[in-house]
Length: 116
Ligand code: SF4
Ligand code: SF4
Image (cartoon, rainbow, N blue to C red; front, side, top):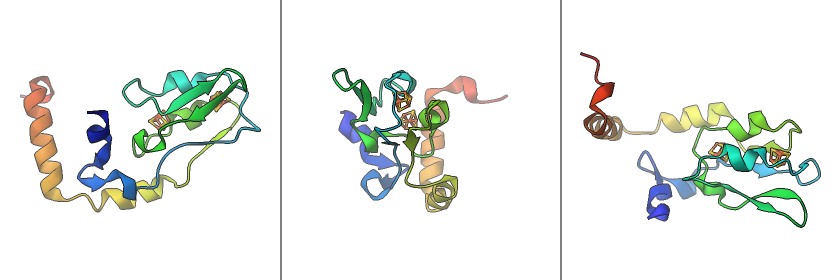
């Protein structure tokens, strides 16, 4: 179930997308903020209580374009292999048909989002 959810990003194979956090263990203080920051559905991070460090468990579960954990890490221990420009260029490859299909499904599922 979860694997299907993470397999595609707007129709693009997630495995072809280079986006996800990398932790520098020398900088990580083990505060745990990134572990609680990342949404429970994704749970990209785990925690090693012996080493007192966060670890990346599922890098490809990271939401493409998100960098909340990087921004929040006070010790600059988190980096990403690409930047916002990479995501913009990737977004340009999403087909119009795909966006229309997803928008229709989203608005049908969330009628409160339709402004009358
Ligand atoms: S927020 Fe930064 S310092 Fe804290 S556990 Fe995560 S990577 Fe380590
Ligand atoms: S960037 Fe966002 S989705 Fe990705 S690991 Fe960090 S908090 Fe989770």
